[in-house]
Image (cartoon, rainbow, N blue to C red):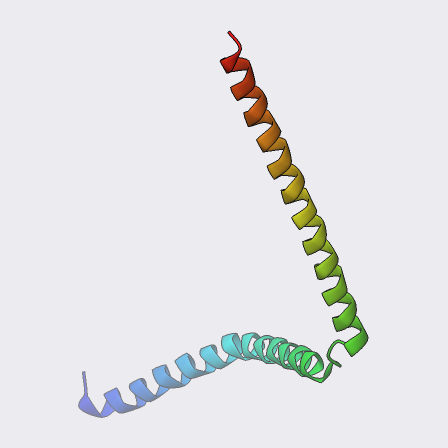
Length: 96
């Protein structure tokens, strides 16, 4: 093989490889770019969205307080029932 023929052959091989990669990767990169634009737009929309109103915050706080009060009442009822059952069980055991 003649050393003068190597340089043009390497140049042609590089040209075909680069051309093939451009033809293959260009559509993929365009789709990826449009996908990233959509994601960026959604993030901008989320950041610009108005935060919850003060009325919503106070309403949620009131609902949580209501749930907490109901849970405390249920705990008191459960404790009372447990005490009654223990006393009843102890009373039955002491009778015989």
